[in-house]
Amino acid sequence: MRGRPLQVALLIAALALAASRAGQSEAALTKLRAGTYLLAVSDRSSIHDFHISGPGLNKVVTGVAFFGTKTIRIKLRRGTDRYVCDPHRTLMHGRFTVS
Image (cartoon, rainbow, N blue to C red; front, side, top):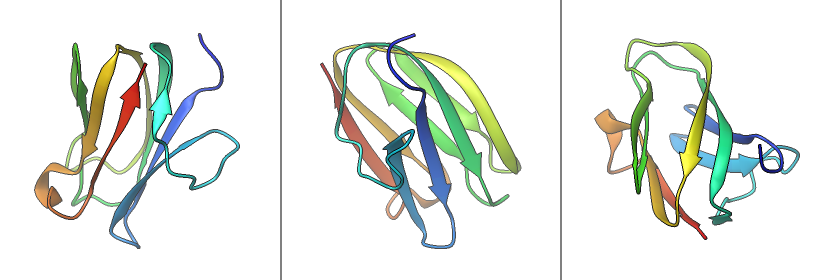
């Protein structure tokens, strides 16, 4: 496992997605090195989902009906990865680069 776990928080109250590295609360995530990470998603609403995609990756981590926290292992490859709440894709989305 490279570095700290990657944490992604679904911030429903603010209707925004924020990606951050552990220990860097709410800092915008823009770059990561390729490798294997633990992805911890905290979904605080049963009307949203968390979907991450990129080279070799396309995973809905939490479905719309899910409420709670889920942790999965993901492999990030070089390129651009995106994360989105599918039902609210125009408002709740982001991306980061993997090198």
